[in-house]
Length: 540
Ligand SMILES: Cc1cc2nc3c(=O)[nH]c(=O)nc-3n(C[C@H](O)[C@H](O)[C@H](O)COP(=O)(O)OP(=O)(O)OC[C@H]3O[C@@H](n4cnc5c(N)ncnc54)[C@H](O)[C@@H]3O)c2cc1C
Image: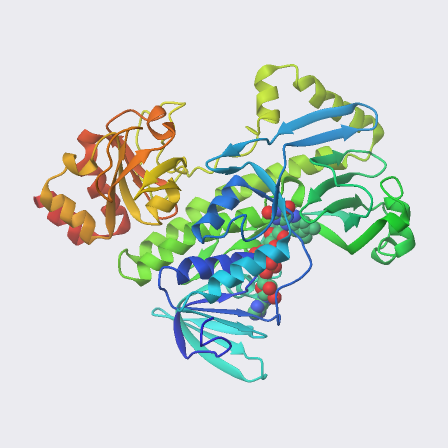
């Protein structure tokens, strides 16, 4: 545990306002890079009420970056998501079986257990100070720094200076308001009752089901520890007090279990929102997680989107603070993250309309249409194989654009690097763990250094870059900058001799044939603002 826990410092590199799952993950990402961080939260401890229940492979991949996985918090892999109508029966199924990029496509989990695991990770970081019962009151942003006014646990106010301030302070974010960012978008007027419970005499279901009943929509899913969640859409006129009453809960739960057979863990009424602000950053201040965007949970993407935010922002802040990149790179955070967050919100709204159709006739039509769509193979794939889910891919940002991208190729600049198994230093590892959040030039079946002059190699290393040669399955691995393609998955999807530059957040920054190795280095260092290095390279 950090010895400085609980004490507000005078200054730090980054202040993170909010130690929910998103702020805490950012603290861990920065802490493991050795950045000085102060995380404050007005709450005295972790919120023990589960909100998020589902995570996808991308979220699990971000958690992999802070070494938090299924040994730290229990997960249930979900094989399918079924949409069921009382009239049509099962009218759509999404296949979520199997893994993608090294992780299950969809799991359910228990949020407090995840938050505890992240907190343990932060406590192991010597450069992170966590101050709970500490509230941001206001801040002032100057050209060189930000000065935050924080009310500590004793009620005293203290000014703390930082280079960057991050608002991870949830849906009612003060930081968002202080940088003048309104929340644009729609509120789903429907309220939902969430019931988390355990049945004493029956096991939970193994999949997620959406009961799309115009009389009352009910999503229902299993969670670790024998838990299940039911979400009941409220009828007009039904109040929170009525719905949270034990007699009403017993009535709603009657089709699933007897009152005596049910251990209710919690009940709560929520109103869901679909909103996003117009900019995720203003100069030295950045917004992440629910402070920047909120979405109804129909596609389980609220926390997932927040985790994508911090993976994107974390390394950029660390590289700027450590002088390895120019502050201008931080503008790419908004460019890269906001469009995708908006696409996810729109997908959740679309799903919400499918689930919440109240009118029997329109439910019949919409669900019937979905059922018919399954007969057409392209539409079936779109819906059943999750192609409907927007790809996490940038239109603009910190990557080298290349013309002539061929569909079907695994590598694409501005897109996540596929993850595969490698043998490295005598162990089997997932490739992100081998890249270890570095800036890595990877050669597929070719040593990338063989395409560069010694001076260029040195300039790349001096700028904080590394090299990795992926050797064919069965090939000899003799050095630390070599790894064997353990299952043949890396080289089967990428032409031999191809190169890629992978960013610390595991996105592809540049890719191309070995003949472009030198220009890839210029371009990537240029994007990071390493102008001196670039001029040395160009003159060599
Ligand atoms: C019913 C429900 C189901 C959901 N299901 C899913 C799901 O299945 N999958 C999914 O991905 N997402 C889901 N979500 C969304 C998910 O829960 C949120 O997106 C996620 O918890 C947001 O995390 P956060 O860290 O951004 O914000 P929060 O968890 O809200 O944390 C914000 C923190 O900031 C602190 N804070 C606020 N103001 C200040 C201040 N001025 N000073 C200091 N501290 C401050 C608060 O105390 C709080 O701890 C669901 C949400 C709900 C309500």
